[in-house]
Image (cartoon, rainbow over all chains, first blue to last red; front, side, top):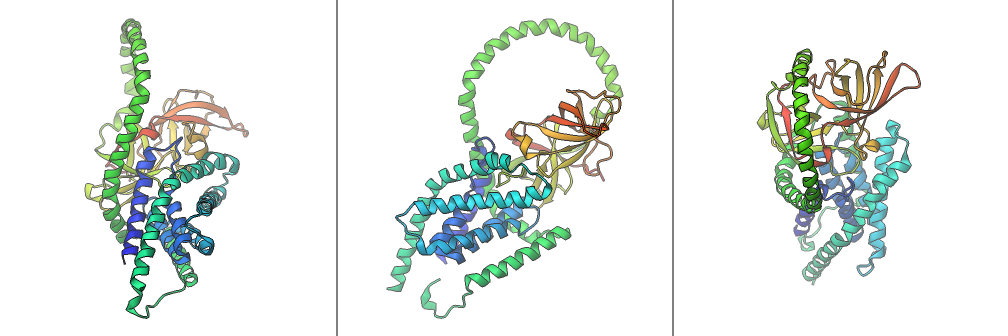
Length: 169
Length: 282
């Protein structure tokens, strides 16, 4: 119960920060993607099921406020969370390389999918431009932010594991 | 969820994924084909998230304006010196301009368009959050249906067109701006009344331009610097609202129409307060 509540708080806080504070602190019009960090981290820390739920609700929130159709971003984020969950078996808390690699990959996939579905289909063909001006800067900024955000998520993870161990024993 | 509670029904993640995927597709199809917007969902989300956004966006604005101030201070001092010199120059210029003013007031009667949108009833609103992604340019304002805002109302800032309201909930509304990649506005050149289409473009936006196309200018009278306003035939936008000024213009390959770039009248990067026109076109 407490875990679910924490997840809800995380999603709302990240969404709020992403759409307000980080829009004011954007570099060259680019702001980081906290929701991807959240979705991806919950995926590889807690497994596919958590990944896809967090992704689904993060995406749904974006859909409600900024989406054209309901369910579009929910779908993208959900699959990203699910795929990240597969990597739970090779995730170790001490290792920072895998999380960063997964977050990078997730943000990259998100960017490419958004481009393919929302831009290429409206005959905007300059992938090179969009990659160098939107996708790549977003990844760099997201990685910088996740260096701060990730330890926080890791600490929450450790806290819950301790709680679970206590309730089992 | 404690494990002690005994056998708890759980769905394997594979099936959950499948169920939610189907759910997403259904909802997408429904919202795409019909006008049905999940109103309870919107108001619930608005009830929870909007208060946070209001608070945090104020903090964000405060921080960014402080950092801007520091950067600008040096420039401002230098600028102050320059401006003092210019005052002298300008006082002489004012005298000559006063003569032109008489001429201008006559011309202005011809363009009664300009005064039209001063009479519309407007309501001020604050921008509380911007699109979470980096691909599109919509934003959320802190006024909703409680304040009389409806879908398709026009939004302006300063003197120029910002966009229009596309979604309304009780305490917030979503505005899609004219620089958004998906936005198209029917417009006309103020001086010649030639019609054209203004469309937002993500690629040009970083340079501060928006694209226009399909300008029928047979006599070649339209030139850089001309004012572009919303046209009479647009079914969403009120006529005569300033959009921007032509920056570049070139004739298309078909030799019939022209296209080019225009500079919007509104500074979209530093937009904090907007005005919503409460009159609708239809």
